[in-house]
Amino acid sequence: MKTYRPTTKSRRNMSTVSFRKSLSGDKPFKGLLTSKKRQAGRNSFGRITTRHQGGGHKRRLRDIDFTYNKIDISATLETIEYDPYRSANIALVLYADGERRYVLAPKDMHVGDTFIVSNDAQVKTGNRLPLGKLPVGTFIYNIELSPGAGARLARSAGNYAQVIAHDAGYAQIKLPSTETRKVSDKCFASVGVVGNEEQGLIKVGKAGRTRWMGKRPTVRGSAMNPVDHPYGGGEGRQGRGMRRAKTKWGKPSGKGQKTRHPKKYSNTFIISRRKVGKRR
Image (cartoon, rainbow, N blue to C red):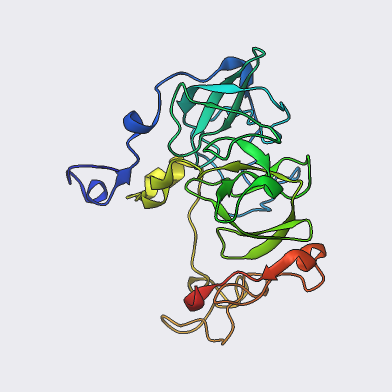
């Protein structure tokens, strides 16, 4: 982590990741850059549909490959770069057939290292193979939920899941949320841990820096009027005044309350629910 001299009050509590140590310093590959229209949390009528979004620095969207559909073709890491749309770093890889793609950069892989997507790949960092071929205890990321659908789970910086069992054509994996669920043995996953694990230690330090990230201010519900929030109103400073925590729209939130739909289609695949609050 990189800290700063306390020249101001905000600098005193500010820290960032040392990019010089983690990135290769190369410019983005133009062939995989696209533009993305920014809605700032508003719909086609200009009304706010998602709060706290807007402003921020201009960004270019990197086309990240989560399908990994180039089977049995080795790839070499050419660069490791920053991606403004995700917490993890990305790597530009060159496949043996000459094609370049962006993928998530795993921990402990550097420029010049190679990996392969194959049914018979070795169990080493970066390689991608079916869950049925992975031994118990393996750390994995970029996990598919259905064969060929692309990576869906464990994609944030420093995240990983762990294979804990194999049974009846399914692999039982423990996810970063502490949930344990079954995934088909035919689904592919990458071996290792997502890089840039220090991202969780960043201290923003000042309000202006969150505005650069495109995040607008958040107001406490207890500071609002009764018409605007269930916690609003009262003389002077008040608590929320109710036993259960709820959102602005009256839905349950936080403090270990269950918000998952009881008839969700994937309930049959969950072995144990995630632990929340003090139990975690």
